[in-house]
Image (cartoon, rainbow, N blue to C red; front, top):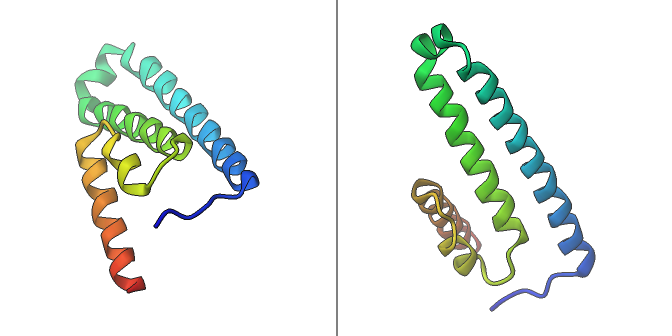
Length: 99
């Protein structure tokens, strides 16, 4: 059963999503600056890739907050497989606790 969301709650979730997207943009800009230094790239490639992954997850979570529909339908649209799997597991665990 899908819960009806109050319009203020929807607006609040969209504001949070906007902030998450802004944060993702900042991570991306930071990664670009850091990646412009060849020595840094040589020594910190894994760290730079982690920043890229955080950016992808941040954007996916922001988009998830903006989407209508059931949690399951929204998770199904998450493009990052590992994140989608974690969200499915977390949702299932919460539902089991509530039962």
